[in-house]
Image 1: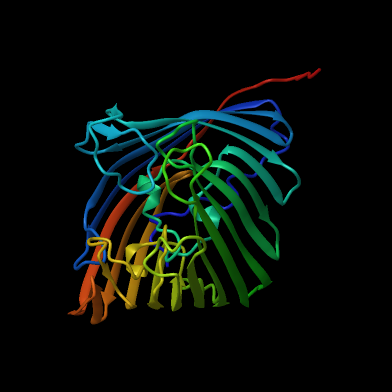
Image 2: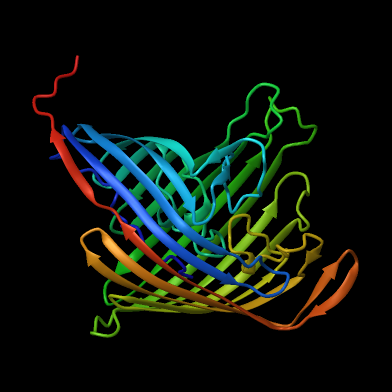
Length: 389
């Protein structure tokens, strides 16, 4: 399911071997407005209006090695004070440890292009669409709320196979720390045996979330959770004026508490058939999601069997029809504006609230948004005759 108002270019991390010594300014800026009109216990409704800045200066030290340094700054309209800790979603407000005007963090990355298909990245890694994860596993709204990911990453982009292996280190642990060590390991891939007018691909993904460490002072055992999926995409490319591609998909999702039963469910699963229509400017997806005891730790709340509004409420079964549409308009090289909307029809279901069963009627929730993205690259200088000892 696509709810991104735009997609980052899949080849953005590739290094041009002819640009040795090149110094560039990447002014990555986008403004967004997203309004979530959500009904029922499933998910909080709120509005995300703001701007995100990720400028950086890059230096290509060798023909296949690039260094980048910059900062990330997040500004919500009407907000002047921000919690300073790492964000995973919209954070809870706290008077302690705050930042003024923006939520900001420095960024640094090293990109080593091992060969034409394989890149190794350290520091701030590429995220969002590079992870090849569907909406039930990774809520694309995190693009507006989550801190830039930091850690290690191995990206492979071949003709018949694409993959992303990454480690996102989310919380560092100091000696005698009151916070827990936290990191996410992920693997995702697509096998693409045919890529012509008719074809298919096989998406695979797995994520492992870790909480806890030897240095923290919290008297609690380690927590390990996992999410994953396997699917099949069948596509047809008519390449007409009004329709470029039709994709029919079926995906199986799973969740599992691997360690200490800290979730309400030990394990769960879901099935999701969908169909997607695309052309140059439009992207329309319609699908049906049916789950039992499924928990997605980074997915949209509509694809989880836990209620976001009330943690005492669980849905033994969750059946949702979803529809998403976005229209993207190119305003020039590296400039885009996009409009998007998504709709959820959640069927009538039984809810369990502290051993009391109730019935929740069918509900319709929706969201809409607009995003303006600017990503100009400005060449500052090219250093010639580089010498290294």
